[in-house]
Image 1 (cartoon, helix red, strand yellow):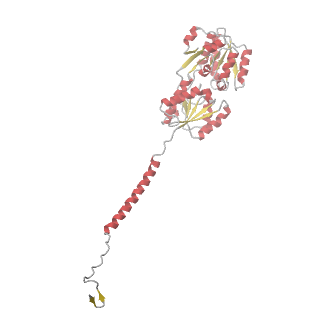
Image 2 (image 1 turned 180 degrees about the vertical axis):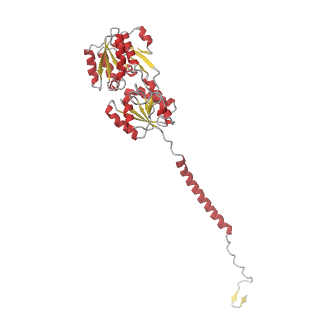
Image 3 (image 1 turned 60 degrees about the vertical axis):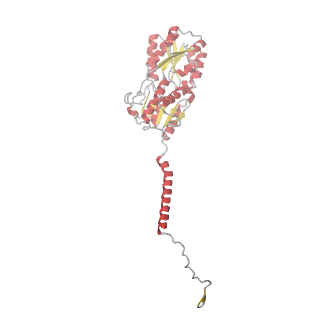
Length: 359
């Protein structure tokens, strides 16, 4: 078929060319909504990742600074009693409580530096195992609470205003029992009836030493015994003191509180045996090393109780308001092995009064 100049191949007119489908206006808005939703979801996801880091900050674990005058081995029973006290209160060392130990190893001139080091660490509480540690701790800080493991005269030493109201940043346990020295001399007289001279090993710089000597002098007068005081101011003085005791014809030895004696207690016990001198000591650690006997405050009990002070302070109590507690437990322990070494027979009456007899 021809139409003018155009020729159609078939007899039908071509159908109109199909138009491509057009997007609905709704499609664009839906895509935009989906994009915004995805964006907000991603933002929420990122926020969720960062939120725990902000909301779950690790809980601060309280730290105790333990300032020791001797070596760890010299006071291991006391330290373990303190740790046991913490465990009884629910603390787990390394998880809910940390202890920073510093040891002077008997070199007391190191104490100020060690105390200052613990203060710089910003520990929450300072634990002092005796007056020789409490003083440098007191000089190092007036704000960090200090708990005394024991002190034989906390008022006289200027650490607290009174036992009932300490009034500063120091509280804890007192071993104040000066009459115990007189009782120790009485026990020596019982096991050595011929006792006429006793060598008293002390340290004139140790707080409470003077009061203990007064009690010994009172008891010595009543028992008709002559005390020979020997000052042990360093470990090098120990052998010198035993030589002086032998030269002074001492019949026995009475050892007062002394950091140097404690740190060298095995040597002290050996010298007593070598000199054939019955000896009574101020703490159980000597008897555990082979010493003859002790009548003393139960110091390990004091250290266990010291954990209670730490717990109260960490929970918000102020040292100034926590009364200093006095000793409630005493112990009389005899080592029959040591008695046999020096050829000493102890009467059944004395043995019956002992809290513990080592056979």
